[in-house]
Amino acid sequence: MAFAVRVLPQVCFVGRQFPEVWDRLLRYLSYAFICSIISITLFMSGARFEREAAPFRAVALAVTIIIAHRTKSAVAGMLTGMILVLLSSWVR
Amino acid sequence: MKAAIPIWIAFVPSSLAWGIAAHAHGLTLDEVILMSAWVYSGPGQFAVLVPLAEGKSALQVVVAGFLMNLRFLPMSAALAPFFRGVNRTVLFFSSHVISASSFIVPYFQFQKEPAGEPNEPAPARSTAGYGRLAFFLGVGATSFTVWVVGTAAGFTAALGFPPGFEEAMKFILPGYFAGLLVVEMKSLTMVLLCALSLIAAIPGALVNPRWGWLVTAIGTAILVWGWEQWSLHASKSS
Image 1 (tube, rainbow over the protein chains, first blue to last red):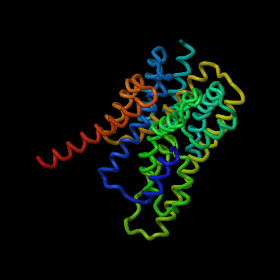
Image 2: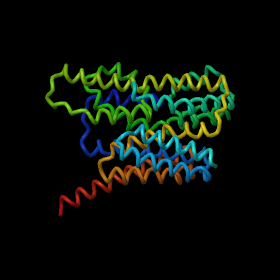
Image 3: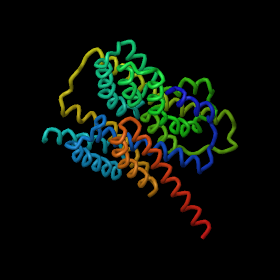
Image 4: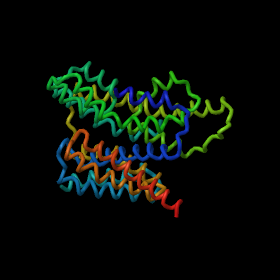
């Protein structure tokens, strides 16, 4: 099943240009999934919301976004956020 | 391949964690390696772990895995136009390494490239398609290898990371994703979409930890897309 959902669009739509409207929907679906993965990975542990760690991780995420936006570098943002998370885990 | 390094680092703790969880749920090493290689999806593999361990029916396991992996459908479809001219058999095999990480890095890279002419000769189209496929595989195949080896390592050696280290490792992948999205954000609609999906995923996951966030992601994307289409129509008719 996992293979099927990956392979079908590749084989059926290779090289095809979707109409702009559908291209946008596909793009938005992909981005929404990515953002949801970010949220779930950072703030959830199974069915539980990580109440204690969430504020620190949210601040680290915000700093990551600001640094990435200013420097135009995803890695610079990620590294800054990672250091913040590491520091906050030692402080807690 | 350089673009994949943050993904490799991020895959280490999550693959180890899945290997350890699979061990705890009674899977054997060959089952762990086979599942990681065949399913290759962290959330999907976690979703089927409990039904498998509890001896639930094969249908339940397949449905759980299928729903979790539905997210690959739009990602794979969004990548497909960039592989123009590539042989379908090659794509059949290479598509297996599509994941959130191996989608987002190549997708943003391809969007930066100049678009080919519609009447471009076939050899030029094919060369560009294979070039993009090579980039995609450089990210996808290496990340896939790290994932499979990591789960096997997690299974065999139940490593315990120091708490702070684990916390930092957990941040790498979402931090990198967020950074990539921010760098590529060009419209207010995308900012709105990302903020809404980021927030809506939490209540979605609280309602149903396996599928709730998938439903909120689909709902948010359709809502924002619908709103954008409606405002476009409204501005055209006024």
